[in-house]
Length: 515
Image (cartoon, rainbow, N blue to C red; front, side, top):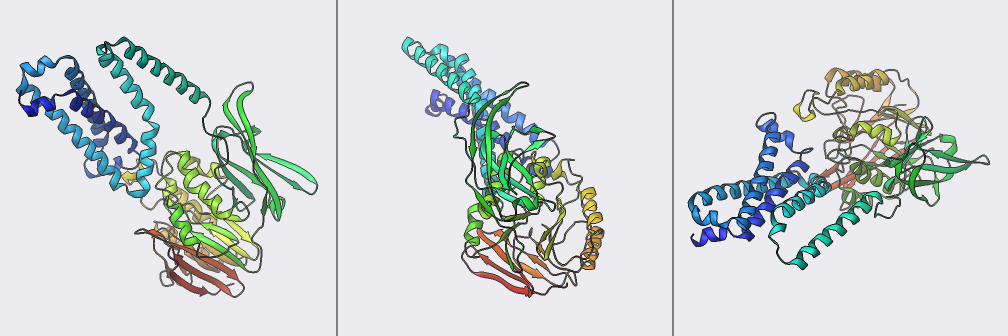
């Protein structure tokens, strides 16, 4: 063998490529929710699945080469040409698959990459199991030193026991992730908060001399399998009142009893509704995981009395963790548990495995409703997805056309009732022109003075597309910058002010009320 062949067939080289090849399917699988559909659209349906199994098969072959490098080196000596070609092909594919994973990670951008990496971390136990099986089946028998063998077996045994214990008992300190956010549902408040592990959720307060403890429950059964807790409380019970939130950690519910941990209770929150003659609302949209960047812009907007979230918190809601990190925690930080929040669903919150559970997790009956704030009214609409239901991005799991029609049927039942503002994620409301036309007619019919929207990632005031209905586009993130806005409602009009995360003013306009 020449020098190149000796280096290629070395145990070190074989081991490195075997490990890289084994990690390749893990990272490729972790990107399935965000990236695979684009591969299939670019090439053909099923390509990503075929590629995954090819990557997995390559990992097995690379492992076999590593075993040969340790156990059957004479094969390399007796057939150097054929072995070099076959071995180099495996290494080539391993390099290509690693590069592919890097490209997918980079192309996903700063909002998708953390999601993929967390997904890969969640698959780590499977990778460790694979490595353990391979090691004990192929390489452990080659270790002749008795003390080394005993040490390895002992370490693996300790790791297995520790892993089993940590599976049964979470190592994290049980606590609250952030302050709660108080969502106005249109019929009452939903107090939403998250904990570091699964458990129950409850709210405690006093009203007219009576103490209330209200649980997150369904038909009498207290929810205990979620980190996100939502508790519905009547308006009159919470307005200008104080409350605490609490939770009992639950490791496992049984048919009779449960295996539970400690109970935690928050500090007391003093809640103030938005019912004054003059109200200032913080308006944020399209933060797409950029919680801190959004807060940089918000810091320049001053004090506010309530929060309007116009959607697109993250690239998708693949897991409960995405909801916790980018909506519940973010909303809790902005509202501090002391002021109302009005939430409008963005199109990215319609995506992912957890998306169908969003309304229940937040304690909302629907994503279209109206909210009264003193003399002012918000009409909240849900634009759903931004493409036809048949688009391949949705994998046959979208029926938003029917849901958008429900929105319109509902808004057409509304009557004129004071100073009204519409909230919708998309500035064009719905992708169907006929539904949008009906919506604009209904909104102008009840003298809606303006619409607050997002989705387009720039700040603008459109007074021409829909005559009689000015549409404000809030801003959000774009090219590393962020724009947030402040909306002040007063008898004199609707004052719109927006600035970026450097404090530069992007909008300063006042619109009149139509009613």
